[in-house]
Amino acid sequence: MSIVLKYFLIFIFLQALILAGSGNFRSLFVLLAEPEPDENGVMISNYHGVQRKVYNPLISANGGLLYYRDLENYIDTEKSKEYFINTADWLVKNSINKTDGLKNGEEYIVWEYDFPWRFYGWIEPPYYSALAQAESIYVLALAFDLTNDEKYLLTANKAMKVFFVDYDVGGMVTIETPDGSSIFLQILAKPEFVKTYVLNGHTQALIFLWRYSEITNDSNAKVIFDKGINYLKKNLWRYDTGSWSSYDLLENQATAEYHKAQISQLEELHDITGENVFKVYADRFQKYLKQMPFVEE
Image (tube, rainbow, N blue to C red; front, side, top):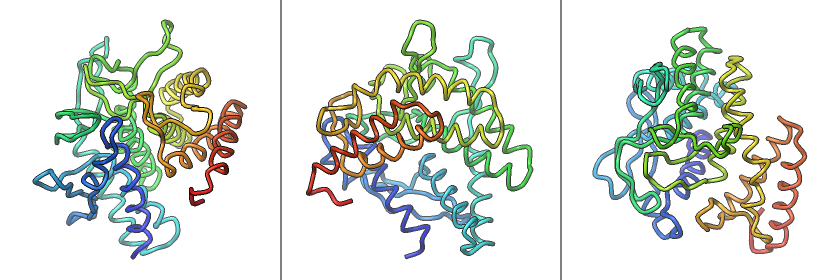
């Protein structure tokens, strides 16, 4: 098994947990699908229960990052670069322009999910994901850095603007304080759909936006990052059960894999921000992990 496929399958396993229904992870193995590259190397998924192969923006963007990792590590360099650029081109081509949601009528870009699935009960298309949006933006920033082609940067900059659109009018962000200084990036987003508050989706999206800002210096990314950090500083306690971490705010406990992922994400956010609260909770969650002898490290 190639390194790309190995790590990609691990990621698919984790994302299948994201997409499992609220309070019921029995559908995990039904949701699991083997990703495969299309004729251009862009990752496509064949989900059981969906009678066609579909492009999942999150899965496609993740495939692009794995191609980029192989390129950095000089693994099948020519093919890795070709497939990475093809993925970035797919993201540009499949981005959707919108004008509703921003008060000034300015255009922004989203990547839509165009197939129904049993996420937290059931969700019909179109719907969106802040995590898919952030990861796609980061892929485009890397493509710009690699090629100096402005189309990638222009698309990424435009896609950033959706984070200023409220969830209830088609955005991916819930505003958590009256002054707007605290926001949450929702992993599943559609007006009137349940707000799940998935912790790892929010934290990983923030990390992608930080990495994007490091490449592009886009001030919008820094604004959104800071507001998302404000939410975590005030609300991490809500994900602490006293013996484990919660996956979301709908009473779903994190799996062992997600618990460990949340530790890593909090450690990275501590490195980025220097905020002690992230180290406190990373250490606390690590302690819970060590108290669970049945969990494999």
